[in-house]
Image (cartoon, rainbow, N blue to C red; front, side, top):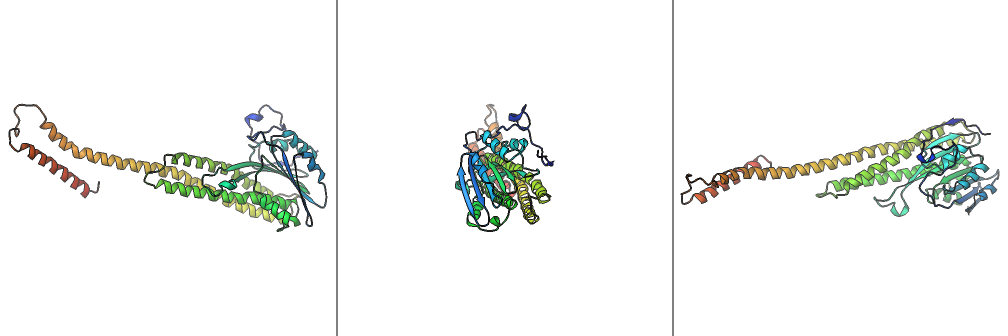
Length: 366
């Protein structure tokens, strides 16, 4: 019986998992109709083999002390297949529960024979990577690292690991010369590198919104875009910030599965995630500032309109006063019988109008 050494982060409860026995494997996610698909990569320094299958039992045929095996499982909604894999690799029931719970926070758990991690993979689809309005993919990734195997569980096809597959297939870099701990580092490194691209995209969106705010007539949808950007940054923050503690714990982990030399690589990853976290905080403040800037812009434009209306009203107040007096129907009023009184009155009103315009300009009110 495997004994759990330490629980790093508590699992948040989901409404779908209420009133269920702990360790019940119940899928909590949105991708309900994904076929389970296995990608098996078996490798060592001299050889490389890759297999694709839809039968979980095909993953049971790769036990070789001389090779490392990376099994990537796509599709978490088929819990029976996940349970088969868990039973074969002797995974704890709570681990299986966390694997299919896509609401789980990033965490790391240490067991006697393996290490379990949960991370969030963030990326923009390739067809939207160069666009500022691309939809961010936030995918739940579970990783199990054993002595000669690594299991990765994803919700669906599509990830950021193509570079790792290429390095394994073509024997590039150090990855085929090291153990599964280095493969774990490579997977985390690929995920964190993608964080930088996501953050750069967020920065581009902020610049575009800033430019739009200073247009003569900003788009009516700009407030929606700012709010959507704020929500996106919050999702990124929830995915990234817990990973700092995960990497800090992983760097200091005293486990035979993690080589001391590989620990230095995890330390470098920790520095990277700190940099990502700092950028997120900066962009978060900038995004909040965008809304303040928008409200200030709207307020300034409203003040300009009110100033113009006030000046027009102020100009017409004395003119309306004069017109009101001479519009009264009294029989005995002075100046009514003058031959040129109409033109004199017009002259006085025009003079008042011109002098008020001159005064306002001199005060730089207009």
